[in-house]
Length: 211
Image (cartoon, rainbow, N blue to C red; front, side, top):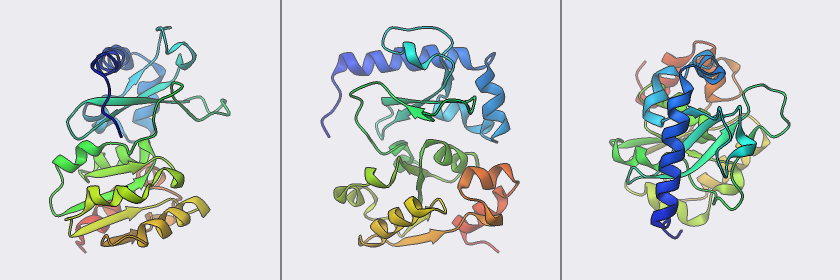
């Protein structure tokens, strides 16, 4: 994928900083805390759109989730409905490319790394100290992506327990990566649901292999 133009990078950085500054006193702060994601707010630069900013007008009232690449640069921002009323749960500016989320984790991972579905599940694993990269939907995994994870001794996949999650697991297992499927504990459908249910220690043990 082509690098972003400097002007685009600067625009994304300004928007991210603006949204970050608005989070603390916003409804999104309570939403994030309620989902157990508070410890990862700073690392993932989560924010809130509390005013109309050119190019982001339709995202007012949404949680802002910047995508930070391996070089530490913001390469995109997704916006999550926090009311449960909008039919469009996740949205993004027109023309924004689909990218793997949080490739910055490649810089902090040791011999093992985790893959999961979507942005908030990635943030959820981050709260537990698990370096993880998010795949924003089964169709977003491309054939060449496996090369990013080549060299890791273990690649844990925390997938959703639905048809899309199973399809994504199948695509990952078709690569030469050392994929280890991990089912969210406690009957949870996904990682964040397990975290909310107090299953964080079990998620961490799945990654570390500790009993």
